[in-house]
Figure (spheres, helix red, strand yellow):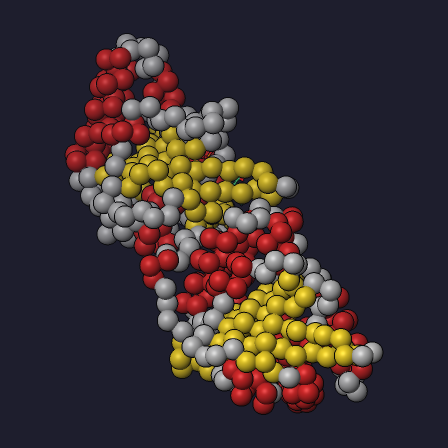
Length: 473
Ligand SMILES: Nc1ncnc2c1ncn2[C@@H]1O[C@H](COP(=O)(O)OP(=O)(O)OP(=O)(O)O)[C@@H](O)[C@H]1O
Ligand SMILES: [Mg+2]
């Protein structure tokens, strides 16, 4: 009934917002505490659960203005009697604690809130630092307050930048749930993270979640798919192979499968690209492409030259633009070295979530393996997420000496290019393995034939693109 205001967080911590809960939101200045607390208040007030927002420092105007930027209209909820802002000035007097408790009690009596936010308790706690008695009265009061309103009390607490660990003192022990917000600069990027320090009543297996604050949408938290929920392949979502040889060797692909394509580091087989384009074309698949090494334009140029060499003159860049405009394709060039792994993962998830592809292609994934090994866990979660969405995922990368165990371990199918020298020419066999089947070698004659078939498929697709062009604005 009571929500954190963020769906993904409610799902992750279903028991956290039960009545009689003391929730602490702690973090450095600017980490998003007020934004999270306001969203929580706003969301519940919208659902007709009255929320009282208490501040000792910030004024109403500022809070309302900032909330408006995030699409929250607090004035309106206030006029409906579901939201109330209460500013209690801190005075230095012996009786301060008694007066503050009195002021809160009066507001609770008049307004009858189900949710109370105190943003923030830090100046208050600091003011009573020297008096053990005053401190324990306050602490007991906040501890009892959730029961008194039979709802949720949210205490916002500031922590110092200089502290390595976030020290909350006694509140950490009496709270039922503690969320810690952090932010740091990595490269030139701001990384935000929410740590679940404690959450009574909810099993927590994921302790740190990346999140973002953006105009309009406010706070968005990314909860990775949990490993115990390994989703099944979508057997009703079938992908045909674009050529006979691979159809024989591998059969159809299904939504949610993960294919890993590997080639030696001394060659980047263009054929993989042609195959991918043909796979998209033959299945008219909505496709998202993440390119880690080359820019989308460079990709288009290379593809164009290869197709031209096979007698097919297409303005690939234009064709890709048309496909993007028609909502069939999205190409994202990402330089992994410019991001922290969390940020990279998070950006990809955002794109995937927004685009809802049938097919996801990740090009030159070996680049990431060299950036950070920590990526593995995140990658696994991402692939499970794609599986859950029924997306066919093809990851391709080159092999530098050692095999890329990360990608191999996660794949349902493996395709390895095996070029070899035969006199003055290079022949290309491929090794193909599919989960539940024996591995097979597709000989170079058949591979060449496959590529010809793929080019024919692309030729047919060109006509389809023309149709898009007619329909796109
Ligand atoms: N319109 C906006 N779009 C995107 N981000 C914003 C916007 N407005 C504020 N932010 C971000 O939100 C952060 C401020 O969040 P918030 O005020 O909730 O932090 P806080 O933890 O309460 O800080 P403090 O300790 O100073 O009270 C800022 O760092 C800013 O980067
Ligand atoms: Mg604040």
